[in-house]
Amino acid sequence: MTDESMTGESAPADSLTAIFRRLIGTHGPVSVSHFMGESNARYYDAGDPLGAAGDFITAPEISQMFGELIGLWLADMWIRGGREEPIHYVELGPGRGTLARDALRAMRRYGLEPEVHFVESSTALKDIQLAQVPNAKWHHDLSTIPPYGPLLIVGNEFLDALPIRQLVMTDKGWRERMVAQHDDRFVFAAGGQPMDSAVPEGRREAEVGTIMETCPGAAATVYEIAGRLVDQGGAALLIDYGHDAPRTGSTLQALREHRKVDPLAQPGEADLTAHVDFSALAPIARSRGSKWLGTVTQGHWLRQLGIEMRAESLSDFAPEHKEAIHAAKDRLIGEGQMGALFKVFALAGPGWPQGVGF
Image 1 (tube, rainbow, N blue to C red):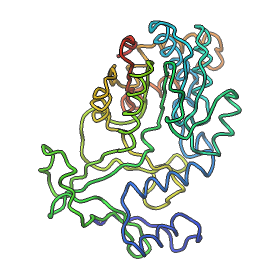
Image 2 (image 1 turned 90 degrees about the horizontal axis):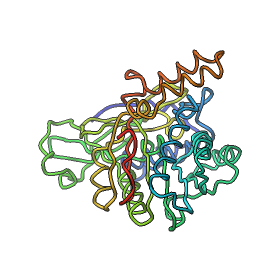
Image 3 (image 1 turned 90 degrees about the vertical axis):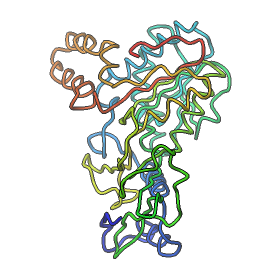
């Protein structure tokens, strides 16, 4: 494999580019998972990547309707699930806190005022989240979330940033896809260790060059969420771009200033993401006894929850913003925009109701 990426002629000694050069020069190629994990850890701790002045924009920043409808869905699940308290709202990777602010406002209209917990590792984003949701409690992972009371869990564009593992078919069999160095460039390369046993038996036969992705972090997250829902009750929404059937090929990509850039060119300075394989996550959740409510497109789900009526209502209230409101709605549900690419994956505890939209 020889896909090449420029890293620049020189780099500051403390930059991730320089660190990777030294690491690879001393110990040899690193895995794609290692490269992605270190890159995103540096990237998200450096500042606020969201919005027009950042590198990308997420659905909650596009329109308040997104967070409001998530809040209404959770409130409906809670009401039909028996209104049990105490109840906890848990958001994975809450960004600026915008989704939580809008969702919590909608929940309050139905008497739902949960304790708020944010799973966040970025110190830069915590200050912004604090301004939006002052009563939130922060956690590094799910292990410190209270073990009592139902959980209402939301993760919007969280799973796509977790490090992926890539395997590539070579003329010698399956190998891990690595990041090596060649003439001041980072390049993809096949590792030397046989990895055939890591590929499901039914998928081992493939053409040379075929790439298969897995995401151990996404699998572990869903495994933990499902177990918590079985033990404590509640529901979870995981929303991300991805696919609901197995695929091959690399989906690794990088965004910087709202443009796609080479994923190897600027480690720690661009947002590295990959498509979520939702088809691999449903069996994991069900293996723990959790209810898998379904995986549907974001456009379908938001329509089922009434986003079109909500857009009309907001337009009537603020007619001067009608064009912007409908443009945001179309961006969220349009087939050629976020509506088809983004999926909504939902789980619930045993005995909890089927969710609207699935």
